[in-house]
Length: 289
Ligand SMILES: [Zn+2]
Image 1 (tube, helix red, strand yellow):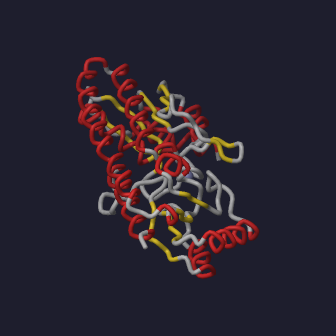
Image 2: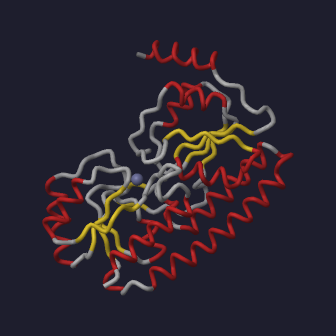
Image 3: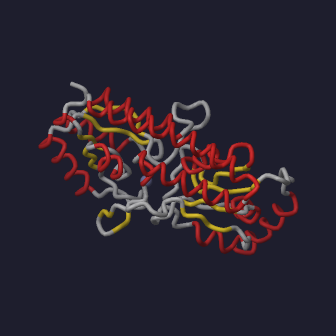
């Protein structure tokens, strides 16, 4: 298996396409981070994303072509906080000289069940820290383009400030007693802490293990006792579990929340800003009386 992998890697290396020589070649581990890097890097950076849209980065299995992408990159942007458990091995086996940049550096991590919660991007204030880290790493790697990265980051940070205001205004319209929802996995801890919406989930901060019958029974009891108005699907998770909870409790399915992945270009959340807007729209329309 390993031998096959190395041969495949060598073949990719031989056949790899030529890249624009003067642009910085970087990798982002997943789609949301890739969007941040594109916004800061603009046309001075070639960004490749490993975990594609509508895919689950918690349980991703890297391919030989991912190793090739990492081997070719100058920087590899990762979320950290235990999100990409598969990444250190990939970077090691790729054998490249890429520097790994942890985009959550400086963010106060939330803990749940003694595990760090990796979904820091779900608070827009945290997204701004990701962007600042990306700006600084790009500027250090390509000093000639540093001014461009700074001005692009500044414009994008202003967009994020506007987005933060939008989120707060939208949540303020939901009566406080109705600000509680069920999602598939615990991906909205930072959103909950920042904006005051309570999230309960049958799965933990990772999607690696399945919900037990006891977990599901516990959620059903909570939904009934707390009169939780809506359950939400996620684009990276099987919808059947939420369908069952909805059927047993009468809480309606409020649509899909995007937690860990953007959609493709033609979907309704192809960028981080579109994703956050989609989520607050889904929340406000499901939770308003
Ligand atoms: Zn997640």
